[in-house]
Image (cartoon, rainbow, N blue to C red; front, side, top):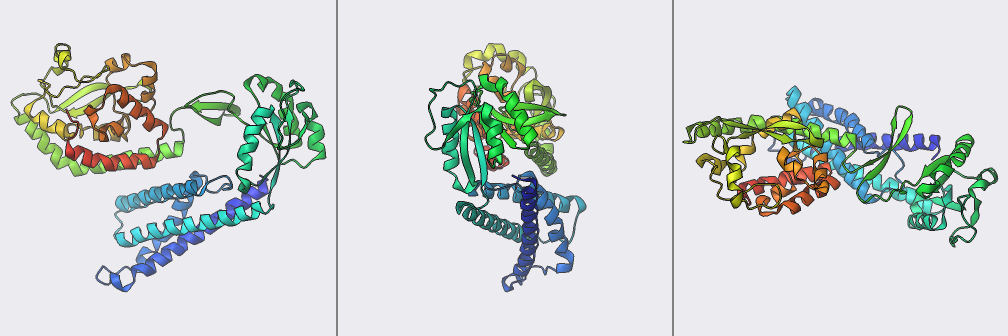
Length: 473
């Protein structure tokens, strides 16, 4: 896409978003003044207009981080809507935090909720309308881009098929070139013309209007790309390389830079820094709030532990394995007798879990108070401190013991690639009723499909799972 067109798209979308957000606030305020709110506290515009003003940069900033100010031509409506939901949720969290931190008195919760809802609806309608109009224009043959493909026929066919499924992308394929070392008897691509070999690139580029070139080549042809890439660089043609020449099953691919050195990165963990930053903000904010809310309960639990016949300290500290093998001290309310770890070798006969984990329904080491704490996971409450410190997250794979990690199979170690959590899919799916291998697969599934929305869903489902006490030991 031409730089001028990028700027036009960005400025158009930004202007439209600003107007829509301001309009959404005004409509929300007017709606809040409707007759059926007469019994509620009166809301005045001059004490609440700050909400609309602050919302504009907050919403636009998070829309920018969601890549919503780039071309939307290849994004589906579902992806656009989901990004708008994440933006609205994150913006609501930030605005709510500002109200809490600065103790803003002129704040109407009902207006705030109405504003969030109306903003999401209007931003969705705006983006759907813009995309629908843009798609309609492209399907009529306007705003198209001429592209040239370089690669072997079977690789080119795959790319051509994908492009033809999306006419709204408005990409016009002029033809394709095969690598210079290809044999003449290679299969052809019937849908588009073969224009020669990669040695003909200069001639083709000089005699045709080419906006972009896509190289879809095998790994053993990478060395031959040097000449072609320099030609594209000299002629100012935007170039892409299809990076699927390494047949990896799990890892995602992204291009980054080490200063001016380009790096092709393969990662099996969530890698969007901004999303992980929001996850950390959520951990800090929610763990602080929960520690304050549960402080009376935690004091009561501490008293119960001190009154229990099995004397010992209130807190139990244990070395656990964190992200990528880092060790940290996990905190729990003591639910076992002092020296319980030394008794473990003699109790393996009653272990009800396969793999390196020990779980037993009638573990003789558990104290009278400990049985109650474990049933409702109350012994885990001090781990909110671990979350606040950054050793753990609210949601993530449960932190294992070092001796358990030593017994992991190679594929199981991948669960250490994400920060451990206070709760996880295993926690809400039956806990100790699930065997060890299935537990590991659940954690890997969480890592592979992680989103902020998934974390929120797990947090919500954790509440009934804990209250039911299902699978607790």
